[in-house]
Amino acid sequence: MDNQVKEKAKPYFLKGDSDILALLIHGFTGSPYDLRELGDFLSAKGVTIKAPLLPGHGSQWQDLEKISHQDWLKAIDQEVNQYFNAYRKIFLIGYSFGANLAITMARRYPEKIKGIVCLGASVYLHNDRLARMLLPIVNLIFKKYKKSYIKKKLRADYEEHGCYTYIPTSSIYEFYKYIDNITKKELAEVTVPTLIIHSCDDKVTHFKSSKFIHKNIGSQQKELIILDDINHNPLNSKTKDEIFGRIEKFIQSLKGE
Image (cartoon, rainbow, N blue to C red; front, side, top):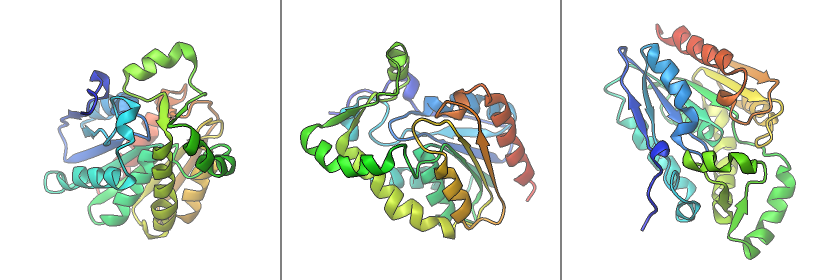
């Protein structure tokens, strides 16, 4: 039986007063709570917000072991499809691995998706080559990997939000499968307007991930913003007000098209 989803990790829906919907997609081992402040901000501007919970997330790390990368893709595809008839303008905002899922949906539904926002996207992790090389060995010995970058004093809050401090090693394989077999191969086919934001001091995903996306994505309308900040989640950073404004401006610039 699956573990119970944490209260703060539950999906949320915020009804706006316009025909614009923003689907907020959290990252690998994260939860919808990671994007809650952005959701509240955009909702106050009239945008309807839906923030789903990816399969295997929001409870205990053991639940993630049962999930494949195809499960994440299927879940987001279903989320996007249910709103096509209800909203004329749909935007996808993905954080970390959520950006990878947004890219796939933009490739699949270019006539339905107005634009995507990629925040701290996942293509290259720090020490990526070493991690890939050691993963088969680690997987033979350990069932889980502890996130060393989470400070002990922050761990309780992190877990309360439904985020995992441990990652099943088998799930890391699924993470890499998606990047290598889907994200990297799809970029050239994505044509919708794209806003890409990353921190140059991100300690989890390397900012060259966003440079790679900007260079290889097929969109004619694309913008890359590299921030000087230390937080992997730019929405929790000292520059979040600027980021919120940039995202709102991006949405507003496309709402009349």
